[in-house]
Image (tube, rainbow, N blue to C red; front, side):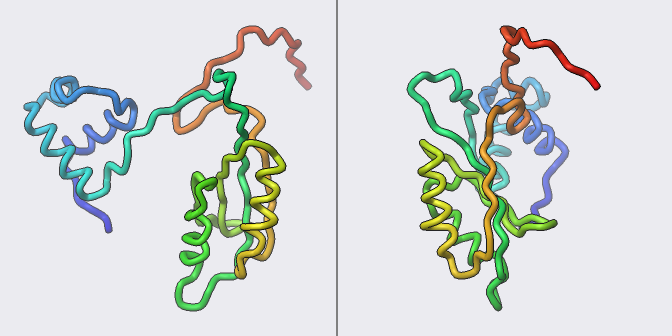
Length: 168
């Protein structure tokens, strides 16, 4: 469902999208409105599921104990009669390893982001869980080698990179 929002609510959403850590007091000052009004707007936007979550972005490459990897999987699907792609997408997003599922235009139908500890773990997910779903026709798996920017956040540049830049 699409909801109507006020100009102030749009401003509030833009502020929270940039930094969900902003306090209600800070938001009130930025928007030039009362604290109680900010609280009411946030409550309404949460209730309407316009504000879905408050997320922290973590650069896991800086955490020694974290050895996981991220894969992006393109999936071709035969849609089911009466439910289209939704039933297949729901079956896929219920797996805890799956971080996101998108319906796509182009050469494949669904795009899945998956996190696993090893390439073997991702391969087992694809072969034993994903490929066995009745409507799945084919998959193509891509592994993330390095994140430069994610969800609008630019990850720290590595100033120690001393390689020579090669240009054509």
